[in-house]
Image 1: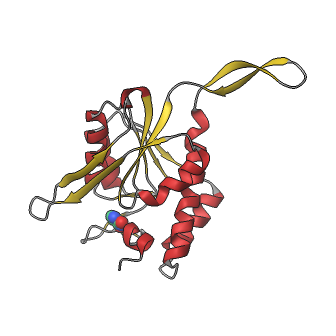
Image 2 (image 1 turned 120 degrees about the horizontal axis):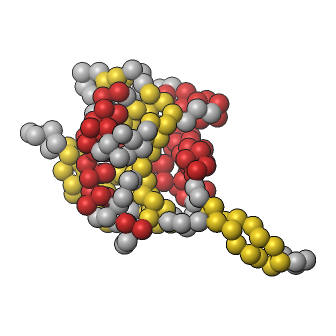
Image 3 (image 1 turned 135 degrees about the vertical axis):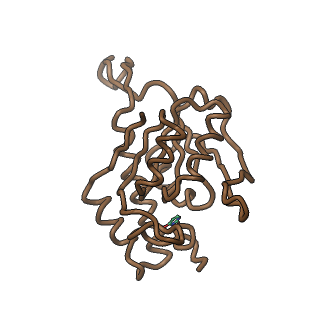
Length: 209
Ligand code: URA
């Protein structure tokens, strides 16, 4: 079973509280989401493996360590996932980026893929699917299925706010996936919004109310 990591840090909590406040406008919301995503990426990359290399300083040859192993691929789920992308890229500028677009079919209520463009050789990369709100878990689960279909092995899921319903869905559909979140909220209301949540992340990011 995948692990759920709640990334507790005073800065993350403070910024998330500002984002939850309905008086926070689009410009500030967008900046805060990037900042939180960067802090979360800092925490998430804490466990990346290091390898020894020998380098020549201006004074002598010596051994030091650099990040080893697989290169990262970030896969934001359109459109709200884009709001976290630049924050992560600030820390990991060499990461490759793929995009997955999903919409919810009105009749079946199931996520339908309408766009997919992913880096090559996903099986050789550490893949992180990024989507701020883990609500029912339908689109995050579908995005994880897409990246696995393209070769991703044990992808990770980075969200901002999760609820138990969404966590359960991911753990059922993708027991190999670790989830990284800034908070676990109470649950979903009758309209599918996270409570207390922060509203529709895409609308708040792009001002589409
Ligand atoms: N998606 C959002 O953007 N917000 C929610 O509360 C639930 C799903």
